[in-house]
Every structure is written in structure tokens, then in C-alpha cells.
Image (tube, rainbow, N blue to C red; front, side, top):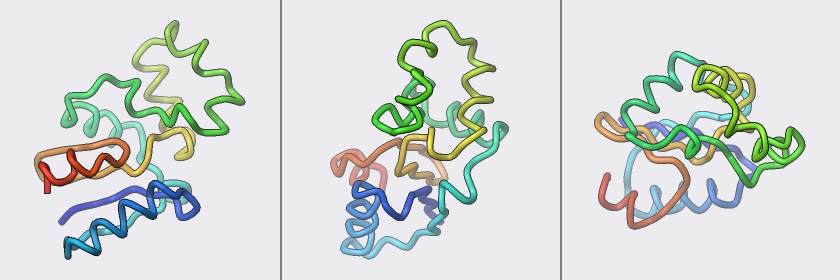
Length: 116
């Protein structure tokens, strides 16, 4: 079963869910604000994704800007970054798509089509 972490007010999440529905792909929707991934889960997802850890941050989010993370992340250890990501779902890039074999951050239709 495909899992998708989303935030209900995010237009990109809405677009990705519409794409899943239009393509008749079943998924489990998880509210990233209310039920965000914990540190252990984030570590597993990061490893499975093969992506740089920075790709898991919602760099366009209000909280990211408020915390001035663009200045702080380069000096943080991986452990510190995982703890920070696990502290608030609004820091995590969304939608976060999880399949048995892949993890994708954000919605790029071409990438989702390849994975699904």
C-alpha cells in the first residue's frame, strides 16, 4: 500500500492526491502536521530514498524561514537534522510518498509516474 504524508492546506499535496485519484492508485493518507514521522522512521525513509537529507526539509515553508534554517543546516550534524525534522511535521518536505521500494519528497509527476 502506498502511503502519502500530506498537509491538507498545501496546494502541492492537493495536486498530488488528485493525480493519485485520477490514476486510480490506492493510498493511505497521513496528516503530516498531526501524525508526522518520528526520528527512527525518518532515518529509514532517508536511507530508502537515496536522497540527500536536505531534500527532506520543506525549504519553502514558513517554519523553515522563521528558524533561519538555510543558514543553520550547513553547520548541523545529521543527528541534529533528524531530530529537528522529527520535531515538527511542517519542516518535512511534502508530499512524502512511500512505496515498498521508494521514497519521494515533493510532487514531480514524472518521478511519481516512474515509481507508481
